Image (tube, rainbow over all chains, first blue to last red):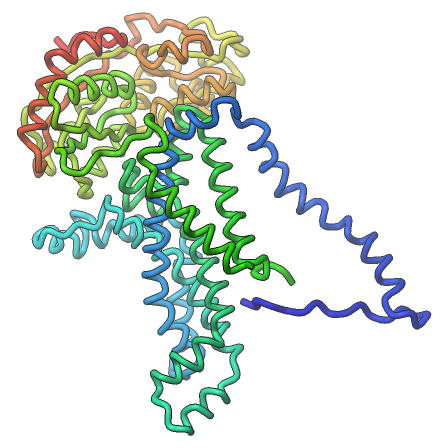
Length: 278
Length: 261
């Protein structure tokens, strides 16, 4: 995923004045973004308009928004951590090594991206559930993942990690390996090279990848509700709280939704709109 | 500048999350150290059980009751998948039977009965005046999904009334539980829905019109409760079940439930 790309300068116009005609054309053509912009913004504006502002705070409390926020933070940070542990070595191997079946392996690793999240949840249940493949054994030793916060983090990591793999792989590929080679030739160990030469260069891609993964984790619903359930205080994340609020108090659902929207936008801005800007 | 903004943001989110407990009294999480009872109960029991839970906590002193309300079939499925549950209260015997089979139930008892009714939006746009009207062309009917007790009972009512084919063709949405049906009607997205009489709560009543279902086609729902095998608080769970069978009965009655016997 390209993180930073300088925009191409305007082509010189036929009169020779650089960009004069195409600037005018750009301005007229700018209207083409309108359908997409409207498509995205109208529902968001509707949410803000329909929200019951006068009772916003009590609605948030009734919907369990603050507890859900805490659970979401725990689950998303856990999911990002798990994803990093899994994705970093995979991305490095996919970018830097060549082995038979590499394409197939990459396709398999990013499979969860095309898997409907609820299917991911069902698959995890089939593995770790009480009647699942390893769930029975786990129960015998007293370890349970289903319907726990850790389980929610696992389910979320399952669907988010592939994004990190792709981001990091692209990041590795964009680096110049000559710096690594130079360091190696000066006697540095592979681990030292990775830590002190490769990783620092990878930072922009790493940050972008982590934020993308975190954003995906925050919005995860299907896998979480299937595998971890919807228990307030342990597994009810913000999206699940919104879903529940919709059953009893749609106004509350609107308010919590806006809370999520604001949080997500704030993070995107803080990390620097570089992520999505071309 | 960006880095500092990110740091401030991260810290504020962390602090916000950490004081989630203190921020709103309406949003409480179980405190550490007290025994916490986990009760999975049918969605139609939401109001009654929430009240009973508070009363039980008050008289017991050391316990916290944590509820998860939802469709009885979904809850039974969660229990069978390993969700830690102390007490299960279902809106039909079918799902209690399932949990009794696996993982097992003890101290099972029926705690209430219920009847069904039809609700429409306040202005009754489709002019529903009787069960038979649900078979009219163009009526947007919402039922709970099949498998959900309210959904099964609703379909039974339509069958009893002899209008299954036409009425089922009018179903525009299968709600995830009976509260979802209420929601569809109050929002105006449905012309009619079949729910329990107890779902027409004081909050809901001003937003809907009710159309009675005559006794000869109506269905009586039975609500069993039980302590789930594998519960780590089986004594406390048993106390809760007994509380529901005892003092809890007045709460259920006040909400419109019929006595179990």
